[in-house]
Image (cartoon, rainbow, N blue to C red):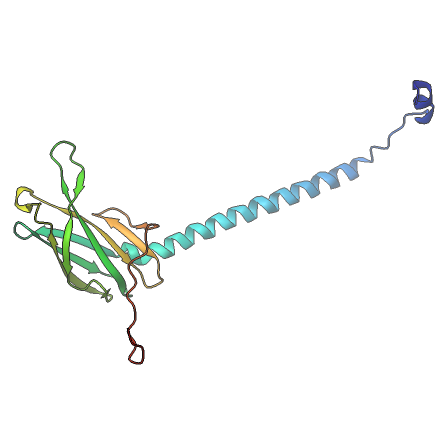
Length: 185
C-alpha cells in the first residue's frame, strides 16, 4: 500500500468525536467510584485481619511463665493461665544469661515434670525442669524460659520472658497416640 492510497483511505475532514463534557464527567466518575470501592475493600480486609490477629492472641497474652533456680540442676517454672480456656502441650526451654553478650544461652533439658499436657483456665501450674548434668545453675543469678503452648483454638504460641506472644510456626508438638481399648499395639 503506497502513501497515496493510505491518505485516500483516511477521512478527509479528520474529525474525531471526543464526546461531550457530561460524557467525560460520567467516565471519570465511574473510574473514581471503582477506585474508591477497591481501596475501601482493601482497607476493610486489612482491618479484619488485624482484628483476627488480636482475637487469636487474646488468650495467649494471658499465659505467662516465670522461672526460679532451685539448686544446681533444677529450675522451677511457674506457668500462670489467666485466660478462661485451657492451654495444651506446654514446653519450656530455659535460658541463662551469658557473661560476654548478656544474651540468653539455651540450657539443655534432661526432663520436665508437671502439668505439661493441659493447664486449665484461671490456674497456675509448676513445671520442674531438670537440666543436663553438664550445666550447673548455681553459677547464674537468674534464668528465663521460652514457653511454648497450644491455645484452645489449636494455635501454637511461643513466649519468651515478658515479651508479647508470637505464633510458633515451627514444628508441631509431638502427638501422642491414642490408645483405644479395642486396638492393640
